[in-house]
Length: 357
Image (cartoon, rainbow, N blue to C red; front, side, top):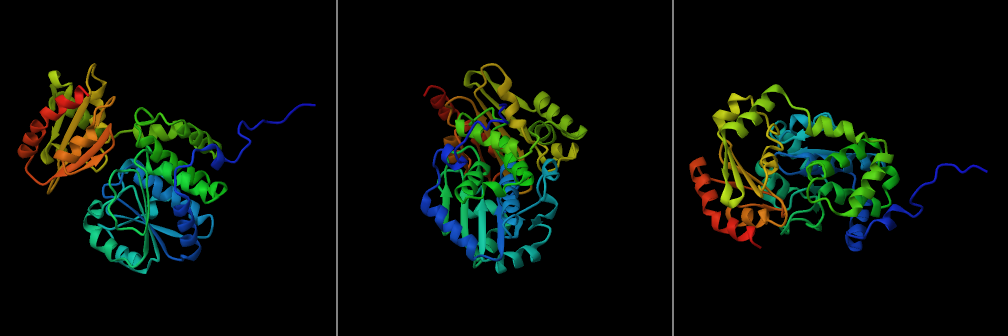
């Protein structure tokens, strides 16, 4: 007698994945969802793939249990993410401040995704702090601030999107994750690991990917659209940055890329156009640490990447008013670009130290 298709895993997914989220937090979120009628999901400014992916992965799944959630972001998502299901319905605070204000004031539950400090929502900070809603943090960065009633913080996890998936499974909502939600969650997982090239050695990641594939996502298409499709001006910006604006410090196995506002404008820069730029120098043989300084209107944006055990996060925390993960971290400086370069040079002793740890 022929057998039908055999499912490799015959136990519930929540049993297969190692337990990460505290049961008390799961119970608290379950109760809040049962009691809430007006839900808002928000994330950090300049939202990346993980911020947008986790937000809409959660929003789509909640919609499938009859809980409508509005996604309110501090500013617009980057162009390469606007094709994701639901993103056209986002409410950017910079574009619709009054509507965003009303949503936050009327909400009885706010999910704060992929950030753990109020300053990360920029101009929306006071609005979020003043919201009377119960707030739930879901995040994977170090040292969360105590501004939420429920804090799900796991820096050992590679992305907030993974945490959202884990939480949905613990809430017994795996079957309510549809293709749209799965597409968004996978995008967040993919972008926050550089297409699974760093911070991606957890075997659970690949169990989750398999399940998302069974939901119908097209991971090859997502990679092409999110990480491997660029406008002509974006490609020229990357080429210019590498050819003309990259400095190599061979003795420190370190690179630096610096771009001014004028240079960004020359290449018709839009937020997200420099995605992945900081990773490119790490393709150079023996390169360990990459730093990218971008001049914004009123600050210098700092992005760093590293390989191996080099502590990019500790340098960002000490020098750049930021933090992150061992191999992917960032921060901001309120100074001129020349002063930011001097800050970078002042990190040389620590770069030397971490190279030999």
